[in-house]
Every structure is written in structure tokens, then in C-alpha cells.
Length: 266
Image (tube, rainbow, N blue to C red; front, side):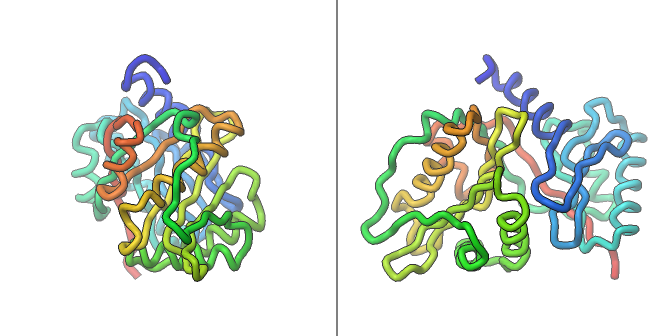
């Protein structure tokens, strides 16, 4: 890893944000003036992933207005500006809120070397890991996500099925199932060719199974694959629930990121 946290963050900003890759089939990443955004269909993730560090107040307001116009013109149900705490100007979050974006819960940006995390991890008796490779597995994965996070898993299901069918080569999905085959935890990994980073997403464990090492096992499973494919770093946007576990595993905190979501009036 680079010598300082600031150097690691700069590497992340450059490779994963300014030069972002599409996170699935049917979407594209484009530079639009001072921002980089991902654009896809209504069930894809659409939003800004990077903004120019030199952005000033007037430039920020103009960029925000342009993204609202873009989102509205495409008829998207929502559009996210992924704001990092070190982005400029310092009051960019306030400007997004003033324009109608709604801030969701902030997450912690964590990064770690993949190889040291790739060792074996014991699972509770009766629990096993199962790769997700088809639509049936994706449905179970979405069910685990719904049970862990109490959210609707339909968009996740759509994205995972589409990815497995059209572009599975840089995508890993895995779940933990109990002795009855019921999913109790799931997680995904995006591999970003041309970078040193692999992103861990969606890790969540059903409440009754937390504290038993299952989440840690899913991290190790994905870390092993990342290391085998030559990726040096794992990156996570962690919730308050998963961040303490990841810190104990050796992840370093590089800052926070907050999703600002705009939903056009219907």
C-alpha cells in the first residue's frame, strides 16, 4: 500500500473515481464537464462518482443543475451524487441539499491489502458458502439481502442476474446458507481491470446469525479470489454495522462517503 493514507486515497480517487469503469453491462461512464458519472437504465445505478477537486461554488451549482437536467431528461427514478468528505467545495453537500438532493446515511471508505485477508475462516456448524452463478442463486441472494437489511431486493436481483448473464468475468457473488439451504448472508465483489482495486459490496448477515464469523468468511472468500487474480486492494463503503468488523480485520479508514439522492417529481 502507498506510504500514507493520503497517498492511498489519491490512488483510489484517480483509479476508482476519475477513471471509473462501468459496474455492469448496459451502462457507461462519461465525463460531463467537471464530473464523471455512470449512466444506465432505470434499474441500474446512475450517479456522479467524481468531481473536479478545483470545483468552486459557482461551478458546483452549475454542475448540480446539469445533473438534475440530465436525470430528468432520461426519466430516471433517481440519481445519486456520491460525495466524499474531502471533495470540493467544502459546502458541496449543503449545495446538493439546497438543489433537492436528499442525504442518506454516510458510509466509511475502507481499504486493505487483499492477500493477508485471504486465509481460511471457520464457519458455524451446518453453514456453508455457495457461489452465486445463476438466476436461482441470485434470488436466494436477494432474499438474504432483504432479510439482513430490511430492504426491497428487486433492484439487486435485476442487477445480479443481468451481470451473471452478460458480463460475469469480473464479478463474484457468494452467499452463506444454513443446513436447510436458507440464505443467511450474501456479498458481491466487483473486479476493476486496469486498477489495483476490487470492491466488496452488499455484505450483510441475517440478525440471528450475526457474531458467528460468517461475514468475515465472505470477506476471506472474496479476498482470496481478488488476490489470485492479481488485485492488491479491497475497497469497501462500509455501514456502521460492518465497519468495526473490517477495522478489526485490518482495513484502514480513508474518509467517509455520503450518497446524495435526487428523485425527480412525478
